[in-house]
Length: 146
Image 1: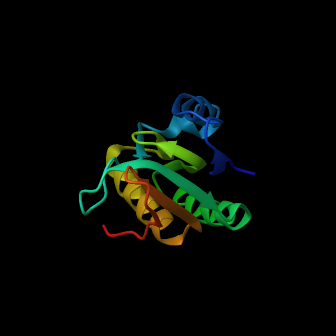
Image 2: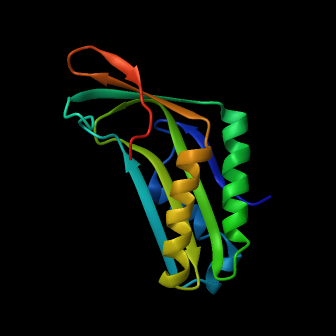
């Protein structure tokens, strides 16, 4: 079975590890480009309030199924060699990495649209919940406002 990524606890995965694993894919020799997206913890809310921490939870089994489906769909496209999504869970500080999306393919014209689609789809489809804890001690569950 292909490595599509998955849900990982904070501190168990780094981008260099992901890239090393990607280079183990024998199909990478068909690629001319690798594009990546790294989601990090934002330091302020859309309203300008300061964020102290972010807590991320996931329905792991379902999330891994969704990740496999998204990455499988993208990897089946002409020009795409590999697509992976790794979402971290736990308690994060501002600027910590929380998600890695990596797409390898024939060229930049292939990988950039697939990367954007991977990010948009995981944001909509993945059963992951984020709680922002503000510096004033208040907290709330985040809904996407982008």
